[in-house]
Image 1 (cartoon, rainbow, N blue to C red):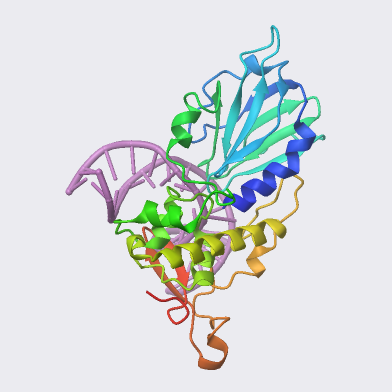
Image 2: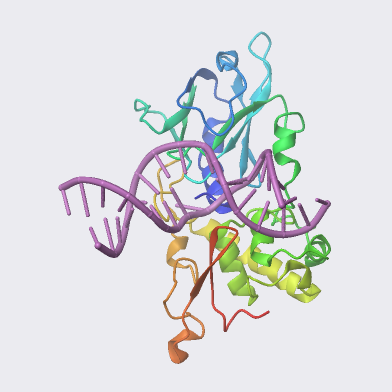
Length: 282
DNA sequence: CAGTGGCCCTGAGCGC
DNA sequence: TGCGCTCAGGGCCACT
């Protein structure tokens, strides 16, 4: 579910309110993708810092205080079906609520039916286990230093399809299945094209498209296909703007109205890819 | 060693 | 209404 915009919208929706709060208790539900790594009780009395984001991970610093815990932070990932809520009124946990950080300002709760998400304790972002989890991540899409030339260099000589290269996130992070499809459509690039075949100008265009699509999704609060909501419980609206994702068999919004060209769905790496074979070229 | 596919887990939706 | 099948926004890891 959550790609970069959903993760960022989530982060923004609770970061200011939780910063400075005291940890009162930690409650664990069923096991997530990786174990927390500590008991949780060690965090009681610690102060919560300012949440940041790297790729689709949220880093929540837990500040070391004299006599009140180790100092470090929680690395959170929402997986496919995770969401975070932050509320002062703490309803009793449901079957899919697997982590509660109970603080003086409210409860930060991870709800994740499929449990592909994770909450992992790490003494620092650049120490294990966080360092290993973040090690393979590509550049941030909104890094002003990032250029099409960087993508061109990262993909040079590789044969994987550009759609899968975007999804893998080892050149640039943040575009999951929805936004990878949308960005490739916007850039007019066939998702099956080997990434090493992308010309330098097309890498520029693709980076522009990734930024445009992610920026727009951020503006409208992300995509709510099933049940994505930010930590206030507000849904996103990008699903109403998708040009190809989820539109198999419907006319292409750009070329299909007059000509009858339909959006196609193919499978790449066990994930669906939606595209227009007329607008998107090899 | 680049590239592929399995797998973690639950729920929704659809055809019969 | 119920059953069984397929698919879902991610990403690690074993294997070829």
